[in-house]
Length: 224
Image (cartoon, rainbow, N blue to C red; front, side, top):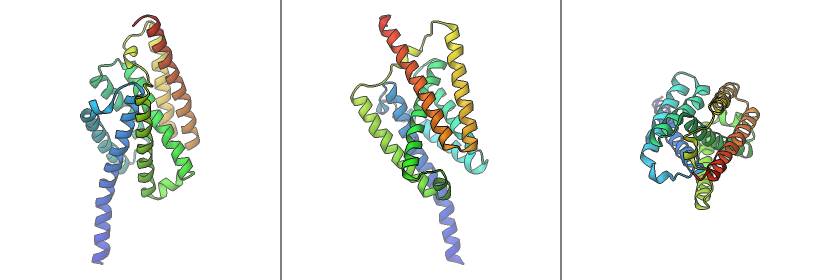
């Protein structure tokens, strides 16, 4: 009886500790990739990045475990990173949103692909919490390696080009795309459809990467 009690206590202690550790690990990988895509190096922003990651990991734990609102967590993360970018990097609302969604969806599509390769479906992740921790660790390693490669070869976009927009219609159009993407993301997370999630990630990622490229080319042509 005492042995079973000790095991239950250990399990209860391990769950929040394990969740926070691997969630923070995943968050660091996500922020690293997000910043690298837009030519920022994580080591210069490690403390503010770590602060927002810890805060959002704690919020994620509460929403998932205490309130059973796991499908809301990704939306909170996207919005949270938008505020983080706007405050730390002094970017516009549209620029912050583009950077947040591009980074988050890039990380998401890598994780979804790895989940399919390693486990084949979401049931394996839901049935065993250790499988989720393994996926988070593998995704962190993959995204860290990709970020190192991208930064080392000078790939990425200049976020400063999002500070100003020529046409008001452009602002409205991009923000509409952002709102639609986040809304669809919330719906898909609620239904837990891995295939639909992959398609959304891919389409949104292609659009925002193309938009980032087009804005940078325009800026270079204008001599900015």
